[in-house]
Length: 429
Image (cartoon, rainbow, N blue to C red; front, side, top):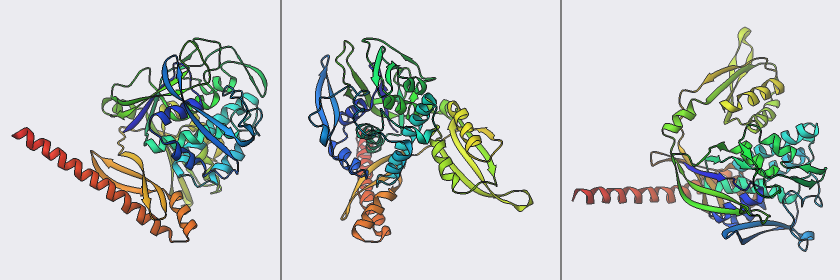
């Protein structure tokens, strides 16, 4: 499966992530066009610049608002004070109303969800009411949603990250002078190995810490089954003795022996619910994914006295058991859980590719097993967007996208099979 390893020896922030993704091969035009699907009506420009940090060639990303184009660039945690504030409810509405793919929406809301929970805990507010002074402005929404867009484009299924350098000292923000790491960063990095080295600067921002918390697994170094194919660097704002860059390894990860160990850490949480309003399940799903759930589903069942009910099932890692259990018990009417250990978990390889149809581009998820293609599924939101735009049946857009992907994918698979056959024949000569 496609995977990345984030080496956070000089911290991690949203613009460092975007810079690393762009240098790793995500086209800036693709990132920009996807972010234009957010219906916020703001004029802005994403600028990606080649820079050098202590001799390392990296990509530095900035977001320029129309009224701020002449404003000098400021450090990532500082430059939001002149932008409008947004609550978590505002951000959720913005993302859900967009025509982004469902996978990008889910990943973006997951990152924002853990961020809102941390900010809410620090400031003593409900998650939905948190005003994102540091992350609610346009540039930071770009960082988080842009990260989700880049992960989808590269087909990343697994994210590993090193221990993180938080930096030290103090930082000016909307609430005044705060210690580094900032309170929200400290909350987000609970249980994650961290340290501080080098200059007294803020090296890890809330956005960067939220990505680690919600998307990554810790690995002290590159996992044994990780084969790197490319290295990319995203630049931070600072010029420090330690190069202020995030190093990203892009490659493939084979879940063999390590996968078996990880499987033992997968848990299944179950509970039966017969007295909860059905519309609450949507909110419950969202909170569970924000808490680290790998998958969530419900099954209609019949309980004693023939009462109709639902069985809620949640798949999660052992480290996220307590958080997921807390969400279920707080947000649902359940008063108890059953917990099972998954003996093994097998996953088909998945990647996202762009299908070209007469009506426009559609993102499709391609699945394969042991080198053989299993099928493809066009992203629902992309198909809906084109169907509405051109007033054509949704099923026609889905059919055209599937045909386009299958033609490309199966032709490539056939070529690979022929190449392998030639290698076998040559070996026998």
